[in-house]
Every structure is written in structure tokens, then in C-alpha cells.
Image 1 (cartoon, rainbow, N blue to C red):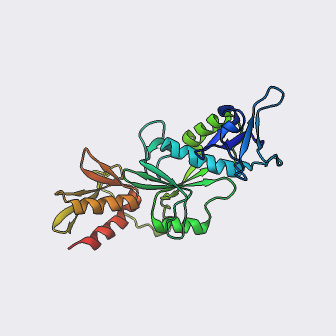
Image 2 (cartoon, rainbow, N blue to C red; image 1 turned 90 degrees about the vertical axis):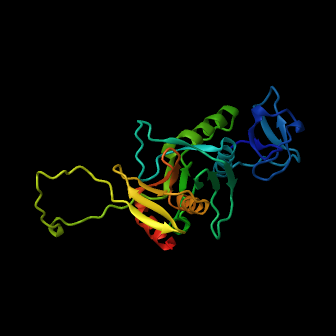
Image 3 (cartoon, rainbow, N blue to C red; image 1 turned 30 degrees about the vertical axis):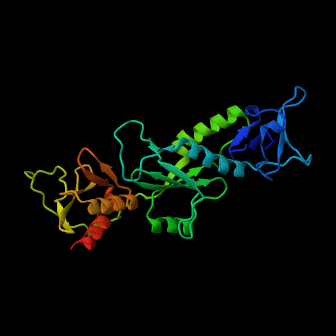
Length: 289
């Protein structure tokens, strides 16, 4: 890539079109961090050059994309994402915009450092940016062990135009194109394959009501307070504290962070995907008095 983009005094990627001429641009080279001069004359295409007069650096598209994607997400405090595995939106547009309370880049989580850690009202979301390398088996295992929602943003096939308009187009793609994003965690539960020969023969009474029925309520007693769990007809798992307790609320909030749950104010309960049911039952049972 030609030197038509640089890093400004606020460490933000900018185009030659958006800065002042000469040293007044206060920009540095993306590759070597040297001071730059913005050359915007009438004889040549506007570009940056090193103040030291050394040879222009060749900007690697991959490193630029990685850095710019983190900048865009941090500035926008949100991202358009495909539905979580196990969630089935009713609208024709299956994607949704996720608002972030804060965004941190390259934050360590034990021995694992995701590219972006976004904080939402119901817990964290990790974002991995893939340009030349993708989430491998070892990283996948670490993410699953953490139990935190993680999405991968694939920028490997994007063509970069290092201009003001090109940066705007790229920003729109990063934020809104859901075809570039896939859920790393949680994963869709794998269907169990059962041989037809092993299935029992069951006689069905045609008078029976065969419409799907929700699971019976399961009740746990935690610190003297009833906590109910049941599965709704459309497959979601809901957990509700019968009486309010700040301690129980924190417990349910923690479970939501770990297992992709969310609070539903209208019903004062916590909703989880179906794949989390057995784990929720184990966790709640372990907390019983």
C-alpha cells in the first residue's frame, strides 16, 4: 500500500485527504512510527513522506486492517452481528446491532489475549480479527474454557483503498456486513445421530394432544429463596428468582455472562439458549442450601 494513510496525534488512522499540509499534519508512519510530512501539491498525487527523507515504507494491508478494525469498533461502540447460535429472530433481517458500554483492545485474560474485549449490559463479548490467521484449535479450546461469547471478524478478502472514501467504505463493511462474522462461542449444539434400528416402537393414541409442551418447572432453593427454571414452548430457557435478592441477582447475572443469557425486564427473568439448560441445572443445584 502507498503512503496515503498514517497515524495522527491521537493514534487514529487517517487519510492524506483529511490532514493539513506539511509537518502540521502531526502524523507518524504506520509501519515505523517516524514523523511524516503531508505532501499535497499540484504536481503529484497527495502522499506522506518521512521527515527524515528515508525511503517510503510499504504498508502491509493485513496490519493496517487489523489496526483499523479495532479503531472502528472502539469509536462506534457497537457491531452488527448474526444471531447467536440457538437464537431464532422473528424478523426477516436475522442480524442485530449490539451496543457496547466500553471497548478494550489486546486485554489479557489469563494466557489468552483477544483482539477486542467489548463490555455489554449483560456481560463481555470477545472479538477476534482475522486477516491472515484464524481461530485455531488451541485458541478455540481456550475460548470454550472461558465460556465467554466470542465472534470472529474475517477481513482476509477485503480490498483496501487507502483514501478518505476508502476508509469510510471499509468502516461500513466492518460494522455492518454480517457475512464476515461467525460465532466462535457459543457453538451450535451438534445433533445426535440415532440409528432407526435402535428406536423403540411406540404406539400412539390418535386422541392424544401432540402439540409441543414446555418443560415442567424446576425449583431450587438458594440462600432461602426459590429460583425457578423452565423451558418455554419456543425453546428458550428462563430462570427467575421468586423473591428479589441482590445476591441472587448477581448469581444470575454471572450465569448470563457465562452462558449467553440476557435479562428480560418485562417478565423479570433471565433468558438463556436451550443448549445451556443442563449446565444451568448443574450450576443452580450446586448453589442450593
